[in-house]
Amino acid sequence: MIQRIQTLFLLAVTIVASVMFFIPFQTFVNSENSFPICLMPGCSSEILNNNTYYPMILNLLVVILSIATIFLFKNRVLQYKLSNVLALLNVFIVGLFFLLAYVKPDLIGMVTFSFGAFLPSINVIFALFAAHFIKKDEQLVRSADRIR
Image 1 (cartoon, rainbow, N blue to C red):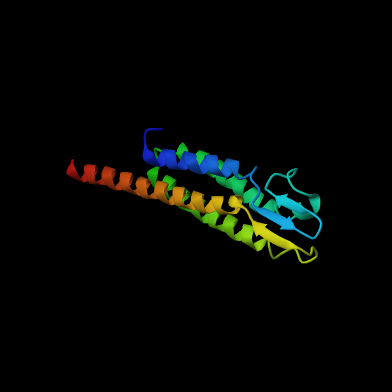
Image 2 (image 1 turned 30 degrees about the vertical axis):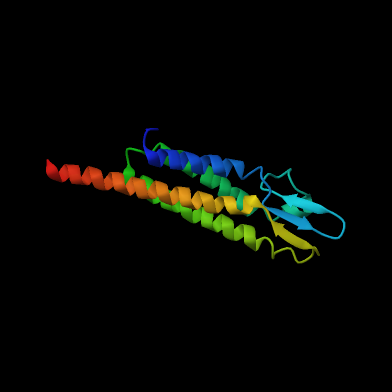
């Protein structure tokens, strides 16, 4: 049901999470070069890419779960719970992005964060808006059932 506002918010979560694969979230700068780090395996250097598998898997889970949540419009209670799980997974992704800056002790250099590091926080907002409107729909349906 595309006409519902929560479906549009969940679709925005899917689009932003898909775009996150291609946008670098960190740039590692040493004395000679700068290396952008993104979630796609071929995007960044292999030396820097070994710790990006966890946020990549979580982001892939967010994409799959948000698409599945869109099609659960008949089960609003489950849809509400899954949209809250989407928000929680995006918080974990943000934490992993910032944790990756401190996990590379063998490489000497500076890590700067790009725009892609803050995209999951936009997803958190979209997922929480979707959960809010799903809960509002459920309350509307329950109040209509009481009137009958």
